[in-house]
Length: 278
Image 1 (cartoon, rainbow, N blue to C red):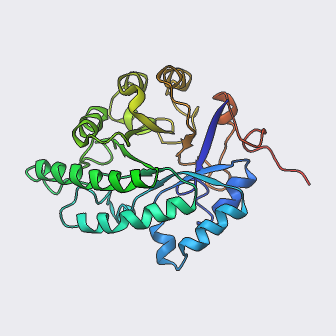
Image 2: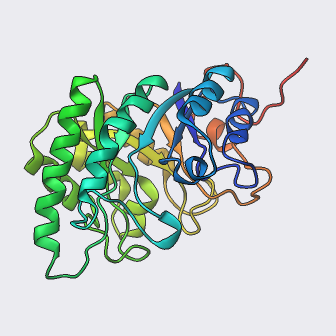
Image 3: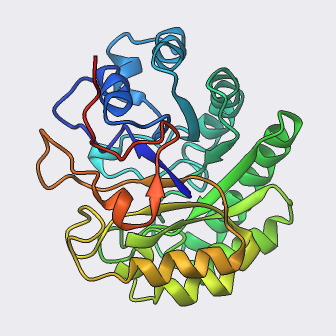
């Protein structure tokens, strides 16, 4: 059965960050994923707090983002930004240390926005150098680095706007532990067929995240062919957990019944959202 992980940075938005760990566990999840917790750190939450909370609720973190800047202000990564590339490199050992403590083996590096079209080629050079640096450090810790596409409609200046751009960058970097993070929503919003994208990327797919289109809500709320997408992932040999990175239609009560409809289960053996007893 497919296993699913709850993204605690986008799900449970009405709760403080650390409280989302319990909410995920109460919903039945044993695996979660997270963006870099910039806001929680700014509020005084520590890496010790995060590691302790994950342990308390029996949660394994399957994906952690490197620091990506101020996401609320429009930042989408630091790795390809010449003004903050050093900040990205400084974050690499910090993120790897936190990932190690969380039992996480995948780190996602958001590429960043182009400062201008004329700057884009040099920024792509920098992106390749910085991700290679991160990949070498991650390899020493037994971890992989993910690269993902963000769609050009919502992030028009993002350095990697589609599947081909990501796959080309992965080939350019030339590290076996740099993989493609297939975010189905972003691929579809970029005008691509997600099934074809899976088959084209094949074994380079290192992580998968789901949300429907339009709206980026729960799978089944829009029109994406998730049965076919998951079938393509099976054909490509993807067996790792799948992240649920959707904006809940009801922020106070995310609906995880999509897990059962997608042929999945949680490690607890019960359906997501099924109430606990006792």
